[in-house]
Amino acid sequence: MQWLKISLCYYPTTIIVVDDEQKFLDELKLGLDDRFACKFYDKPEKVIEYFNNDYQFISFINSCLLSDNDQLDHGSQDLDLRLIRNEVYRKNRFSQPSVFMTDYVMPGKNGLVCCQLTPFPLIKILLTGQADNNVAVEAFNKGIIDKFIQKSAGFIEVVNTVIRELQIKYFINLSDKLYDMLPNSTKKCLTDPVFVDFFYALCEEKKIVEYYLTDESGSFLMLDITGKPSWLAIANDEQMESYYEIAHGHKDVPPLVMSGLKTKQMVPYFYTDDDLDTSAAEWERYLHPAKQLVGKEIYYYAYIDDPDAYEIDRQNIFSYQQFLQAVK
View 1 (spheres, rainbow, N blue to C red):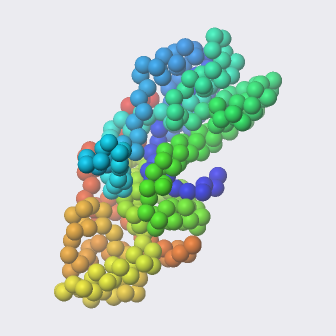
View 2: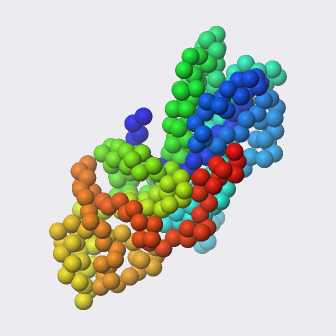
View 3: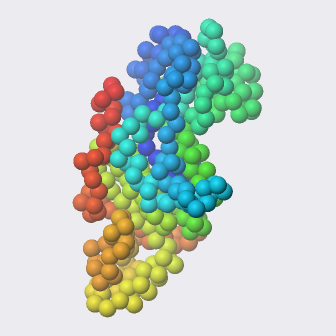
């Protein structure tokens, strides 16, 4: 699927499935991608009880929105993009449900009723038979469900593809709530079709399962299934020139730094606040060989595949691989 934008962060989440036929649930468990974390329910009443009593909405939005204590009565809030990365230390992030998939024909409460009782912002899939097509189309048009899939030949393959897409959509929907607060440069980068296509292709190539926006340039912290970190550093022409001007205004800046910035053959990346506060005279260790990506503007980027390149507390990162081993 071709996406129009990149979410501010993404990590694998839990799929909720309800169907009253145990045989079907057993077949689904065998056919679903083993990289999905799922909760299965065989009665609609059980899943509704879960939503009413156990479900909690926890989002990265909570970690990056700062309230202005002097203007709380007016609901004033600031967005701090550098706090989004802290999600990586939240051990139960993978337990957060993102997609709810339910059969339509069930005793008691049918799947459509379950979808109507499903809390925002879960993405909802209705499983239907041939005879239920009109009901599903009407529910989709009314916004009650986000997708409907017929139980037919090749059904499992379709479900696997759709779940992967809808997990991404879940985070894009959440990010949309913050997009208006983003600096124009960030928004422009994250919605540039060339950069968007490049980004998702890179995630596929490097087997990235989590990513977190780290700055206004469009740089990301990325993790694979084992929790190994890497970074995508991004800067546009204006930002590169700004880096050069900063370095040019300092004494004792190594010639390699000045040359790399002036020719734009090296892109700087500062992960922590301490990195950002470092004197330009010590920037050499923050420079990385730059490649160019030409979209609506020219981007200079470096994929930094070195887990020791920047300070990150790997001991406190609960990886998706560990999570899957714990729940399966």
